[in-house]
Amino acid sequence: MYLPQAKLKAYVHNFIEWLLGDLPSEYGTNWVRLFLLSLLVIIGNTVPYALWSAYIEGFPQTFNYPIRFANALYYPLVTFTTLGYGDMHPTGWLKALSALEALTGAVFMALIVAVIARKWMR
Image (tube, rainbow, N blue to C red; front, side, top):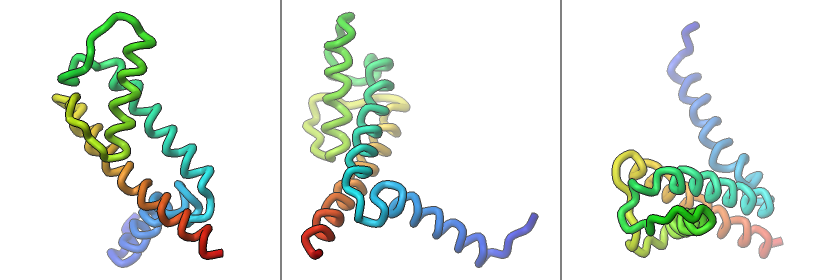
């Protein structure tokens, strides 16, 4: 099946608009969905950081799993909010995961501002 370039471009544009606008916040109207999706991204990134914590320089190594999970939760929270204290930094393939999480966090923070502004303008 061959799609003309203009039609393919429209499909890609519509998908990106859905992915960044409708899915996370229903175009700036649903702050609960945005909050829950943010939590999902943070918790979803906590698991790989906990499992492969040896690839994060500065990560406190322990066999106590609740403490390891708490430390692993700290890193995605700092990364998602693009705060970046610098006390831990990933190596290897976790760099790509951290970069993707930081980009997602920046987009979601902008969406939070849009949702709040939209609520105030009503």
